[in-house]
Amino acid sequence: MTKSLKNLWGRFLFRGKGILPTKRLIVLIIAVSLSLIVVTVWNKSLLFVIGVDTLVLLLSLVDLAVIPSKHAFHFNRTIPAELERGLTYSVQVKIKNLSNRPISYRFIDGLPQSFKKVNPVFGKVEKEETMVVSYQIIAPVRGKYQITNLHFRFSSMLGLWEKQFTVELEDTVKVIPDLTDTKQYLESAQRFLQYEGTIIRKRQKGVGEFAKIRNYVVGDDPRKINWRQTAKLQEVMTNEYEPEHGKYITILIDCGRMMGAELKVGNRLEKALEAVLTVAAAALKKGDYVSVLAFSKDIKMYVPPAKGMEHLQKILQAIYNLQVDANESNYAAVFQYLESVQKKRSLILLFSDVHTFLHEETTLIFLKRLRLRHLFFMIGIEDHTLLQRVKDEPRNVQIAMMKSIAQQQQQIKKREKNKWEKQGLQMIEAKEEQLAIAAVSYYIDTMNRDLL
Image: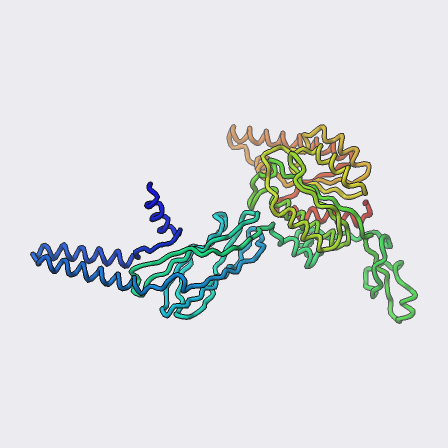
């Protein structure tokens, strides 16, 4: 295909600039052509045929001559700087028509191909008027994107011709993990956990840091009554305690090959990142120090420990663009690195694939040494396919063989988990939609029991 043909084809695809005939003009030409064929059958003169063609041509040229210039339009795009993965957002495009003619338009915004959007966007703007057009988008893939162009096309007064051009509008958009679970926890921790059937356990009576004095309610431990304040205020008051603040939480994120396994929505890494942010928010809200380390074959990123809710934004900006690598995870290297950077006792939460981790025999040596100083807990996502195979009815030989292999794999995993847990290394698998719930529940239980 020659360069000129490529440019012409690009115009029909909303690329570049130029002038194009509309469907109305094409239909008009076809109708005139058919009419001329009929006229020639009636033996009309050639001058009549030429006259009709000339009239149609002049009409379209006049329509083209009065079409406004592209300089008569000004544009501005408003799009959120951060989009949560999978959620719907509104993008606004302001169109200012400086010409003295109303125009009908359609445009395609230069969004990444992975975005789900409605294209093209149709509308009409009156003369010397400014209007704001909104349309919805969904970003299913995390990352940082540059949006540079808006492809605009508007028609002439009679609608016989269309002029198109490209407007350069620079915007940078970050697609971050879905923070729905994190927001729900921050709004109400107890309601967030009870929704999934989990209740925050009460801590041991009178253990931990003194928090405040409040009114006594039915169910409180009478041993916690503050008799001095009770006598002073003439109503029963009780002391309230909470876990000690300032503990260290270290979150490890596996970005190896197995974390790319597809789930109902997204993959394992997507769910792990959402759970990581929820746990980090819970710990930071309690006043603990949180550090995050991502790895696969090598260390990908490390956020040093800090406290305060503003640290959550730093963690988010560090992990939002993490991607699955094609390499196997090097657990030994990450534990060696962790020993060098995390000197204080901490709760280590590892988000990884349990099945892969259990077969890393050399990792057990490093974990035994790590266990002397830190608490270790691993959490993964259940293999839905494996569990489904175990539940299948053996209707034929093929299904029976797959069921037998699935049961064997399940028994091997159970045996290996028991071996690791005897060494004090706890691990669980949760459903994909309950991963954040399970991780936060374990963190709260650990804090309430003063295990750290």
